[in-house]
Amino acid sequence: MKHRYLIPLAEAGDGPPMFIVPSAGATFFSFVTLARTLSTPGPVYSYSLTELEVSESKHPTLEDIAEVLLGELRGAQPHGPYYLGGHCWGGVVALEMASRLEAAGEEVKGVFLLESFVPVAAGGQDSSRPSAGAEYKGTMDEILEQTLRDARAKLSRMPEKHADRLMELTANQIQTGNVYDPATIGSSLRLFRTDTHDDVAFQGWESLCSGTFSVQSVPGDTHSMLEKPHVETLCGKIEAFIKECA
Image (cartoon, rainbow, N blue to C red; front, side, top):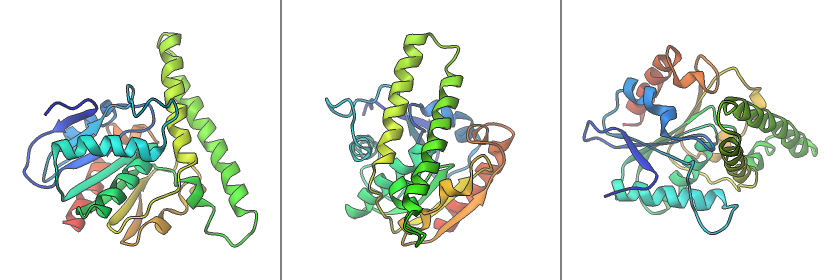
């Protein structure tokens, strides 16, 4: 079956497949090195989001995006069990996908997040101080603005009209996470994070998981964690997570 957005990165193995969602405006290329390094029981898939068309709306919701990606997931593997993962914003999409699969009676063995910021609606809930939500949102707005500046810098060698289109797409996709009412999941959830961002960006994930939640530090930064030499450490920890969930 031909897919519009889903790309196989590693096709060996007959165990549960893994589906990894890239960061906003990104493609499966983000995970090529990871897929070549990672040892998994089943195939590994990712998506290309640069040409994502969800509906006629210019501003689809995160739920809309998750449903489109789930349609392609089901086309490749109609039934579970599954492993899901996501990088940065893609981790929030993976969370929504996992919640929907669980609601449909499918087994999600585990979900891993690669430097994923917790949705704003969840992150401000942990403190009893009345201003906590506003303070958290202000901090996250600053972090997300820096993320967009970093993205623009990476596109500096691209022709301006193409860079502008990708920046608009990236900003729109990030915005879906800002207004997203977070789902919850029952399967194990693990966050792999670097020291690039303040702890506040990751506070609140545990409230979205009724199963086991844990955090592990990995070397590098948001992008270099996916490339050599840091990816070897990351892959080792993902493989250990898979064994725990098996």
